[in-house]
Length: 306
Image (cartoon, rainbow, N blue to C red):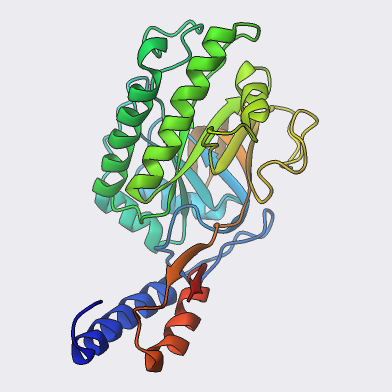
């Protein structure tokens, strides 16, 4: 906004109108693991600020199945949006499907199954010599898929890094480099990053060790698996001061549940997430619009700066 005062006013009005519309759509928060809410539509960053139960399943269920599962205690669903190691075809996962589920109030946590650790047993693995480049390539692909599905910017895309053994320094270095590049590139695209790992894998210990390392871009969200049936995001393997308010736990693995007469094979998750704020500079906004814009931004989880 560097043109005439009248142009500034018009631009500010457009910004306020757009932000107000998004705010109204995002105002309904889904909370409570045991009190499924009949939520209004949610169209903000996914999954956004959310505390409660979620499930993930290999292929996105049909619209009818998702409607039936509104009778369940779950209010978030994991969707596998891409990656060379994604295991299932996704005939239902379209932009229309995403829009329908958002209108129904479902929170979505996008998952991306990319290249795996070089010391894992997977066929498609990270090349240690190209780990950073491959992390960026994965982020480019994931961001493109997220945009094509209509997911809002600032949504968190979770990299699924399956089990790999501890004790291999070269393998750890390659994974760390891949994850750091993945995070940095997703931020450049306007998305947040996440990482899924099992507590039995070296993946969790490696990311804990790298959390404060200079030059390492840590994931914004940690999604960890311990199949003990306990609905919490605390864990003995995870220091309390790491990823505060940005954790998910997969507390039960592969099993079937039936809700609304529809049986689905799922993993169960407990989410405790707060959407991180972001700054919007106010210096180029005319003073008469700043108070209104500031209120709207704060409702969106942003914080205005001078």
